[in-house]
Image (cartoon, rainbow, N blue to C red; front, side):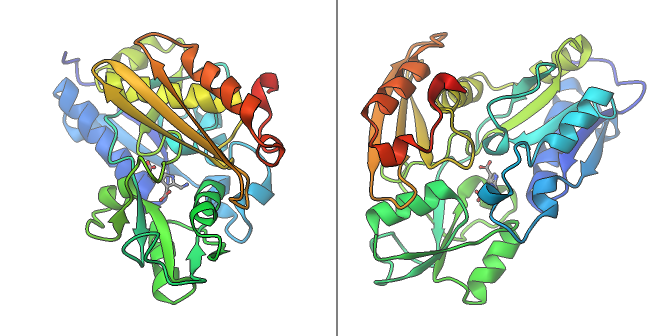
Length: 313
Ligand SMILES: NCc1[nH]cc(CCC(=O)O)c1CC(=O)O
């Protein structure tokens, strides 16, 4: 499905972090390859996102939504860029009406990695773990209430440097990010059946303007159907819970034939309470993730439920 080389380069918007730039370059390569273009058919346009600018406070405290998407959303709306490349995990579930996910790249390794210890069980008693992700903190404290969580923000290299400087004994990073940055061999992958990743982890979501048929058609060539289906299921679950990427919620999609088994766990922030559920999703069934969300909310301890708005959102 090749297309004519564009008269003017397509403008690809991305954050500036090394991981975001690696994802942008991967997207450009895939798109150009799919259409038989040279790489100059796509121009990479980096922006500084508010989430990158504000480094000294926990994200959950900054409060405002769309920390990673606001600037790129505006550029997309104004026609400054033709499409935006995001870590799907960082894209909130409520999106502006005119913006659509045009393609989902084939998912990388969805697992979290533990860096600094060989397993959760092997962490020394009272270990200090660096993470600013409420899901990772709660999941850790659930398994190891003796550990202490130390706030750890910044891009992948910053966090590895903080660990090396002794600010924590261990930390978590997504395997997908490590792999995309060529940091292979750093850390131990955690079994996703035991340690569930974040909704959307390891997926790259490419957004463009609804109605921009030319761009939508070009991007459809690099859409990976299974990755899209699992991402949509996880996003539907998160939307049904009224959760955000700062909520203590974990999810893992596993394919059995064409059926998706979606497992999810909700935690109280201190890890004391945990609730888990699973649902089978047949192709095209859009309501199954919402049923799981309702089931989890109905059974959740108040210390969990108060962190989710439910479908009221
Ligand atoms: N919140 C930051 C973020 N957003 C996406 C990734 C990793 C790559 C991915 O999940 O696609 C990371 C870093 C991390 O969690 O280690």
